[in-house]
Amino acid sequence: MSAVLQTAPLLAPMQAGEIDAVLAIEQQAYPFPWTRANFTDSLAAGYSAWCCRIEGELVGYAVMMLVLDEAHLLNVTVAPDWQRRGYGLLIMGHLFDVARGHGARRMFLEVRPSNAPGQGLYQRLGFGMIGRRRGYYPAGEGREDAVVMALTL
Ligand SMILES: CC(C)(COP(=O)(O)OP(=O)(O)OC[C@H]1O[C@@H](n2cnc3c(N)ncnc32)[C@H](O)[C@@H]1OP(=O)(O)O)[C@@H](O)C(=O)NCCC(=O)NCCS
Picture (spheres, rainbow, N blue to C red):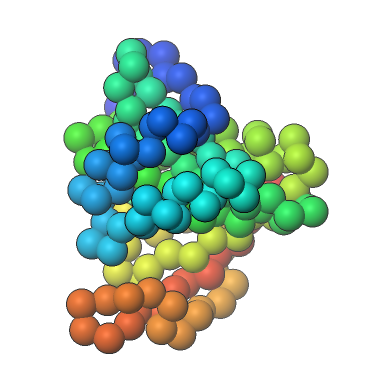
């Protein structure tokens, strides 16, 4: 069970001025983190990008692409110190609301087969595996496949 959220979190659109703080978490959270350019390009492209703060502290963020009736989750991250307290579910719930509000009917994502927390979160939310992309991710030795998952919103 996730612990009860103790302080009201605030979800707001990601601003360019927040990218330094986002990158600091990104680099702690992933062996192959997104670069600054990945975030600046996402904002420039108008992707749906959100920051979650508790009393001003950045605890997580997400980036999603909305195209017609499809949403594609590109990044969802909770800072290591804040993980397993329900914020991943909270951020995903917010993305579902935003996606539905834009007329999206399905959400897609890729996740590493080795990423147990990511897969656990998505399975808990009802995502199902719909395919696999061979050699999608960089890995320590060679490449790692991606599991492709989808959810009807
Ligand atoms: C994946 C991630 C966003 C989950 O965020 P979180 O705030 O820790 O998740 P929550 O506390 O909301 O957990 C919700 C559910 O997800 C699943 N889950 C979360 N962490 C898990 C873990 N380490 N192992 C297995 N399942 C896990 C559980 O079902 C959990 O429910 P429970 O706590 O009642 O068992 C977080 O671990 C993270 O940022 N990881 C690094 C970045 C990453 O891999 N992002 C996903 C890329 S595809």
